[in-house]
Image 1: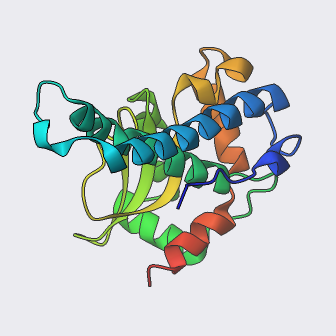
Image 2 (image 1 turned 45 degrees about the vertical axis):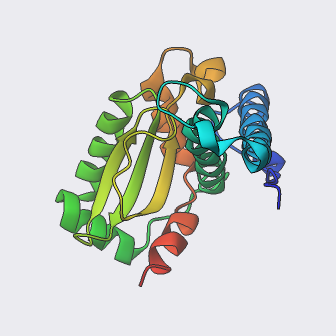
Length: 195
């Protein structure tokens, strides 16, 4: 069954600090990941597996890029789903878990911002199934850097395509705008579903 891009056009004109031009570019890129994922999966159905190897082979290359297109699709969906015009507030349960892991809400936000400054890719706030704690992990590309056994609670796109039209090289300004627009009700629901 093919993957289908979700419609996030409701975000246009609704996010404080994000222009429609920025969102149009970002949504177009997201649609491209969905299309590539479908293309890769279709080609994998008929690619010759018998000559697969580390150096080069069509099947091998498709397998290497499959996770890029998959995560490019679904990390973007998580990102757009955790944005809205009115962000709401983190739940008491989520704040308590964050405070237990980071010492305070402010320390969590500082860690999120520091993590974002440390990667050109993604920052994911997760609940780690190994220790049960909240973590911020950075990813390079879409498929490099996420440890196993993670439940994703918040997805923060740190690629320049997410902010460059509106913020240029001022990534800190983008992060401030992102945090103003986080739909904490979505994050809360993701966290509550883990119980």
